[in-house]
Length: 305
Image (cartoon, rainbow, N blue to C red; front, side):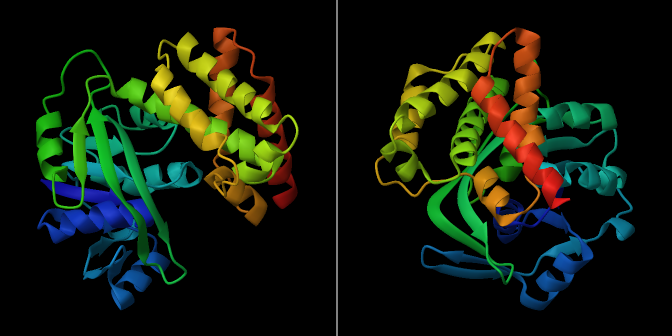
């Protein structure tokens, strides 16, 4: 199976690197600047006592000239449209696309752009970051992929994809209702982004402030209500786990939305919060706090531009 990994950040670099180490036929589609960095240093995976270097096969959009069996899409939502333009030559009637972005809107984009491809649903769980040198630094022994067909029927390609991804360092789990898994993660991502983005701080100081815990609970309840109205109720144990993380005293936990916001970078606010609020309106669910968080991020984006 010929695999194209789109993006070589923390997520794409880790998963693609592990696949390459296991002997899979993997090529990374990257920008020229990242390609030059990887050619010079190699793809380095560090942390947890490891310091490994992979010499990756690379291609840039200008040189991409044939289709692949599996396209693993690992870019952030802010780079999605450009990535779809870049990877277009890689997609044909036999191609399976596995996007692992958070949220749901990217599925519609892929379906519209590549109707000939089979687009699976996917969720990854990994704790890693990209260093200033372009190395993948792993911070926890967690690297999961949950994958499944988006409809009620089974996917003929699912077994082959599962087998291709099942290598040392990656835990692959096929799930019968991957959309529910995606929705449940989306709820958590929206809640953490709205809470830390709107309050402009980590969890610890938020819950220490008067009214902070009630604010957290209200935001999570809004996001959870949208999922339930859409037909994907969040199990109580998952809600309890989210609340425990988001109300932990003294916690330094933040969100990528918050970190991008305070750093003045482009955020995934439209893809994550904006899409949820649109679906909420269609479903008749009120989300005033998520709406306010989205407004704040839109204003910040406008000022940044």
